[in-house]
Length: 99
Image (cartoon, rainbow, N blue to C red; front, side):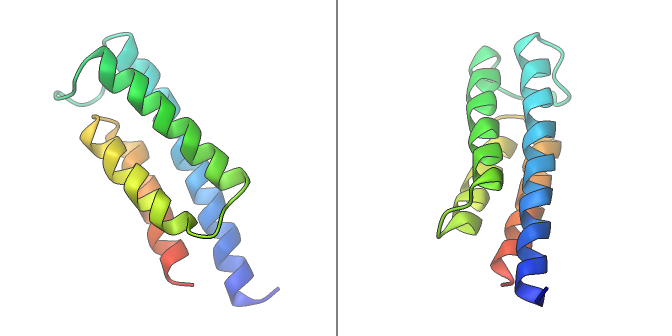
């Protein structure tokens, strides 16, 4: 397997892990026990859950500009108080941008 394919598989695996972590954090935000002291309450939970599902879909079936979309979704997750999942998604974006 070439280096490019190996990095792409690593990006997809890292994005999938970040998406699952973001789903868990979003559910915690929805029930009111989020990990971060800031956020928009239920709106953060719902939008975080939506963005986390989009990240998981991008990890399963990537499209042409997947690293760009992962970067946008990672920043949006961080703004919505889903910090750990957003950071992992941004790490996946950096891995995807290297190829």
